Image 1 (tube, one colour):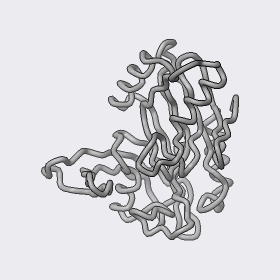
Image 2 (cartoon, rainbow, N blue to C red; image 1 turned 180 degrees about the vertical axis):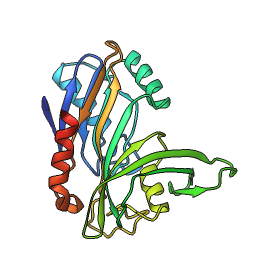
Image 3 (cartoon, rainbow, N blue to C red; image 1 turned 60 degrees about the horizontal axis):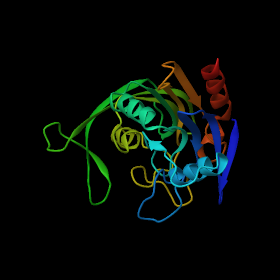
Image 4 (spheres, rainbow, N blue to C red; image 1 turned 135 degrees about the horizontal axis):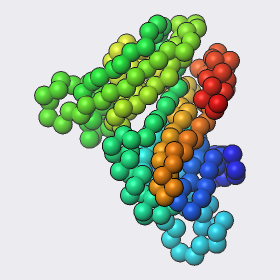
Length: 241
């Protein structure tokens, strides 16, 4: 961490910053960009941070090249120039980057699984569901899920995305019979529970140096994560080697 941004109740660690990239840890329950709630959002907070730090007058450019659901936290990268935004957006669109998540599932997932489904989003409600391949608007969704530990009827799993569909991790695991802990929309999560899904690692090609850049962030130590703290610590240490 090279800096820390405070905005209201949110603390946003800065993982990396140069003239082309800004990588941060998104806190859970902070929207990535402005939405109908009218709440402060990560993109606006980061623009204010850049404007204040570098004393930039007027509007600050910051390109949004990927997203996380509002309740989900973890590593994110933003583009500080239009050229960087174009190259990073193309990489995300072609899934040329490596995105890893940790999640806590309800149930005991004993073996790694490759999940392939067709998903469709309801534009009115924002809810995503699994549909047949031939349904109009259906989009292919693929991911790999690899269990790391099972305890108290819950599974800590590593998820690797191969497509970038809305709510993909949540919907595909629920459809497979292993909904995410604390997921109020797809997993029966109760009020006060924080969904156990975290973007732990993001590897992208630097837009000008063309070298891989990996940004990592461990999940918090509360909620469903608490019973897997030792496994998470080992996982993050192995990742950073």
